[in-house]
Length: 98
Image: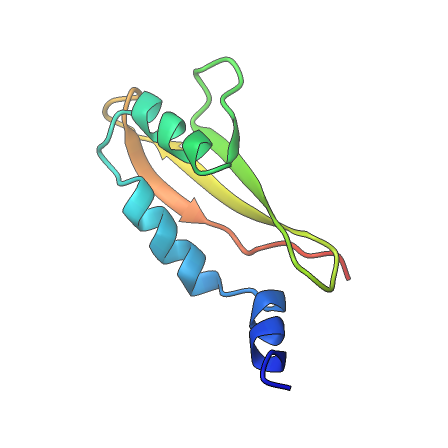
């Protein structure tokens, strides 16, 4: 019974924790190339496309013990004034199969 709260915590999605983690990993103003390296080092796959896209979608599988895995999603948005830098970061809702 002592492990039940730990097991339930492993199954829940903490959206704010993901947001805090991303904000510590990448920040607006940093070079996009550096942001992509940092995201990939944290297990995210970032679809950089041709390199000129305004939004770069990054995803990572969130493994759960009891239910099917979820997908964490983050968009890196290029700066409007300098396309080589991150302008904004959008942490999207974690998607889980029903």
